[in-house]
Length: 214
Image (cartoon, rainbow, N blue to C red; front, side):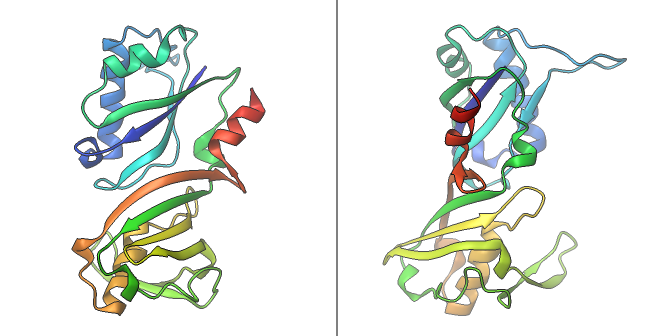
């Protein structure tokens, strides 16, 4: 069982999560990695992703679990078959599936913006009354209290913000929070660059969590 930590950068960051599965199937076939299949009428490769990020957001902390006994020289073979923007950073050889889709519950983000010093982040984290307004999938304005889903909201410097947000089953999309804060500050959201830099299981990074299971 292989758990791969990988980066998803431009242009791969423009690929949706649904299409990402097809990309990984092609990568594994090109890399000639032997993957176990499900049983039944329509068998498919046993591949399990950590909680996904929206299309357009870059990440250096994505994870995929691949049910394979074929782990020799895995990183080199995998990376040689990857399209531009996807790079495997680390490899964990596990005895069983850690079920990251279920246990990963927080994600860390760095936001670069030339006017980050104007965006107020004090009073956002762990504030049960903090709410944002965004447009839902039907393009309707929606207001929701999200303070309990923001664990860290801090200014790193005049051009950088950092957030740690709830993800997985209780997900807060970083772009919705950042867009709301920009609108409140009168800052052009299009100037912001959001990158996912961390993923957590409780208070541990996913890397720490996986090392303890090995």
